Length: 106
Length: 117
Image 1: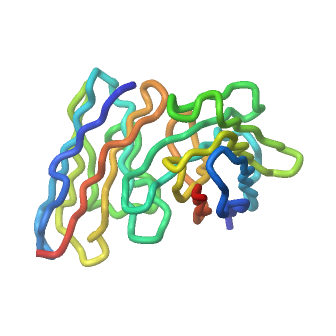
Image 2 (image 1 turned 180 degrees about the vertical axis):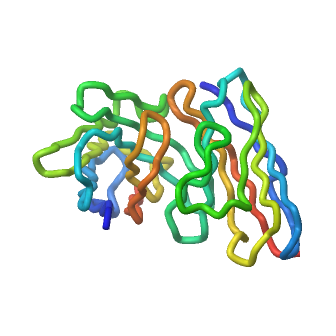
Image 3 (image 1 turned 30 degrees about the horizontal axis):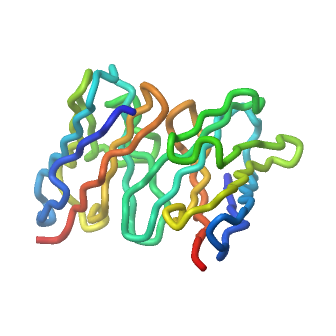
């Protein structure tokens, strides 16, 4: 299995902050990485695929970067609707998720 | 509007079986891969299984291999997950998702499976 490690596990931030979440793979996965947002009691929502491609309809304040084994999700200007848990997921081999990063209000 | 609706969850005893269904509507074709992903209460996401568009290619997470079987009936626009030899650790909300080989673009609302005596 390819292990995905996200950091931090919890992040306290304020509206307007720039937020960065890191995801590391236990081996190289090229750019086969996606990011999802999940709110309590709801299904995950795809934000980014292929490491840096923004899913249609997702606000441009979300961006992804990286390749190989290290990746980042950046929210340029945090909005009230962005407080949620974020997961990375690799699909170089059969898919595996990171442990999640909860973005909470500071 | 595209929609995925899961059903079939419920309470089952350890060692028992359950079959989940996921009915799709609003899609113009059946060319997508489909996945099952689960989430134990208060925990993160765990990918369970996937199946290609014609049903001939399937993959499973190690934790369910040999116990769970994924299938699809494109004539009914429905995805299935047959779960046998259920364990307490299989307790979770089970989501179906539709998209590519590895990415879930569309997701259902989930169905809760509780394995308990």
